Amino acid sequence: MNSSNLPTVSVVVIAYNDAGLVGEAVSSALAQGPVVTEVIAVNDASSDGTARVLDELAAVHPRLKVVHRTENSGGCGTPRNDGIAAASGRYVLFLDSDDILPQGAADALVRTAEEHRAPVTVGAAVRRELPLHHDVPWMPGLHTPGEVIERPVDRPELVRDTLCVNKLYARAFLQEHGLRFPDGRFIYEDFVFTARVLAAAPRIAVTGDLVYVWHVRRSAAQVSISLDRKDVGNWRSRIEAHRTAARILAEASPVLGSACRVKFLEYDLRMYLRELGRDPEYQAAWWTLTREYVDTFPEADIEAAAAHARWIVSLLRATVTPPADVERLTRLAAEPPRLLPPYATGPTGAPVWSEELPVELVGLTGLPVGELPVTVDAEPAGRAAVRIRVHDLYGRLAEAGPVTAQLSFVPRAGGAPVLAQPVELHPDSGGGWGAVLPFRLADLAVTGRRQGLRRMQAWNVGVGVRCADGSSVFTSLRPQGRLLRRRALPSSRYGVLLAQPYRTGAGALALRLAPGAEGALYLVRNRLDRARAARGAD
Image (cartoon, rainbow, N blue to C red; front, side, top):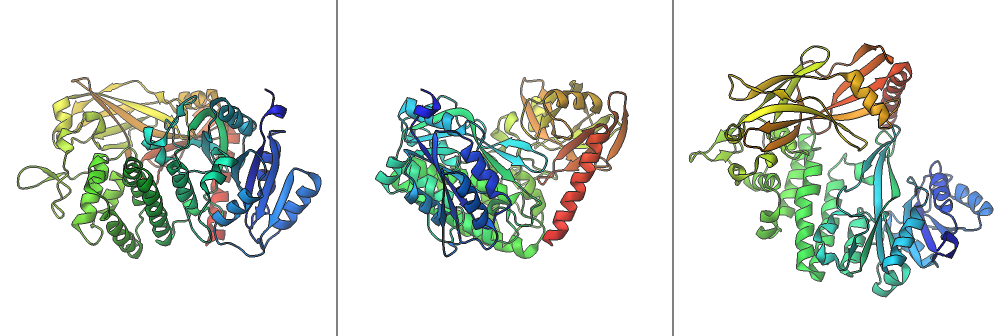
C-alpha cells in the first residue's frame, strides 16, 4: 500500500501569537504527502501576524484550512477541540505551532495503525534543544517498537507518557468516547486528555519511527508552559491537572490510578524539586502545595514508589517548612539521585536525613548497590585528568568493596556513552576512596565527530564504580574547586579545542567541547545570544 492509498489524516495545528514559527510547523505537516488530506490551523485570536501568515499559506495550499477564533481561549485545549470538530480525515494528529513533524511521520503512524487495527498509535518523540539542535529522547525505553498493547491496564507505566502530540488517533474512536481536551485556561491539558484516552481502553500500537520534534527554546522571551516555572502557579496547575488525570484513571482502573500517582512521586515531584531554586517565598509556597497534595495519596502508592521518592515524601511530612538544607534535597531528586554528605544516624543507628531533621531513610540499608544514591566529588588534576573522591554511604559501599572507577561521557543529545579506562580506587583517610582519572579531550572530540556531533558537543560526565562483590553503581560527578574553568587547549587535529565544563541544573558535571576555530566561535556566539535573550526577557 503506497502513501496515496493510505487512509487520510487531519493534522490539527494550534497557534497563538506565533507568526514567526507557525509557517514552519504547517509546512512540516503539508510535507507529509498525500496521507495528510488536510491541515487544520486554529488561530486562537492572535494579536500579532499569525492570522495573516496562515491566510497567505492557505491561499497557496488547498489542503490548509484555517479556523480563526474571535476570542482567545486562554489555553491549548479549546483550539484543539475546534480542530477535532473541523476534521474530516480518518485519523487525527496534533501539532503545536512551534514544533515540527519529521518527514514520514504521518505515513509511519498510519501504516502501524492500519496493520494492527489500533485506535491509538504512538511513535518516538524528541525534545530538540535550540539553537544547538541537541535531541533528547522523550521517555526512552517506555515504548517497544512493534509492540501492540491490547489494554492500557496491561502496561500501567504508559501513564508516564502524557504527550498528546506523539500519537495518532482514529477520529471515530474520539467521537465514540466523546474524547476532548479541557476547555478554557487549563494548563497541562494533555495530562487530562491522555488520561481520558487511556481510560477508554484502546488497543495501542507502537512504531519505532520518529514522529514528533518538540522544540525547546529556553532563551526565548516567552518560554513554553512546561518551562515557565518562575512562580508557583505553574506547579499549582500541574498538581490540579495531575489530580484530575489520576481521578479519571482510577475510575477506569485502580491499577492505572495508582500508577499515575506513583509517576507523580517519581517524576513530576522530583523534576520540580530539583529546580526549587533559592527564593524562600517560592520554596515555602511550593512546599505547602506539595505537602497538601501528597497527603491525599494512599499509603500503598507511596510505598510503591522508588526509595528516594519515599524519602522525599517523609521529609515533606516531617516539616511544614522547607528544611535548611533544601539544596541537598534537590540533589536527592536528581537523576541519578545523590545523597550528599554529611550522613547522620538516629538513636538506633538507623540512617536519618540529618541531625537537625532525623527522618529515617527507611530501606536504605537494604537497597542493592546499584540503587544507592552515591556521591562522587571531582576536582581538577592537571589538564587531562580529574581527581575523584567516592563517599561511602552508611557502610554500604564498604561492604561491597569498591575496586575501580571509570569515567563515562554520555552525549546530552542521546547516543552511546564513551568510556575511559578504569582506574584502581584507593581508600582515603576520610572513609571513602579516591583516584585520579585521566582522559583525553581531543580523543573525546574525535569520537563526538564520528557520532555526528559537529561544531559543539555536549556531554554528561559520570562515573561507574565497580566493587569486589561483582556489584556496581553509576552516578554523576559533583564538581569541586576550579574544575569549571573554561580552557582553550592546543590540538594537533583541530588547532584549538575549547573545553567548557559546567554545572547542570541538578548540580552535576557536564562538558561542552568545541573543536576547531569554527566550533569555538560557535560556542562563544551561542553564549552571547543566550545572554542577549536573557537580558531581553528581563
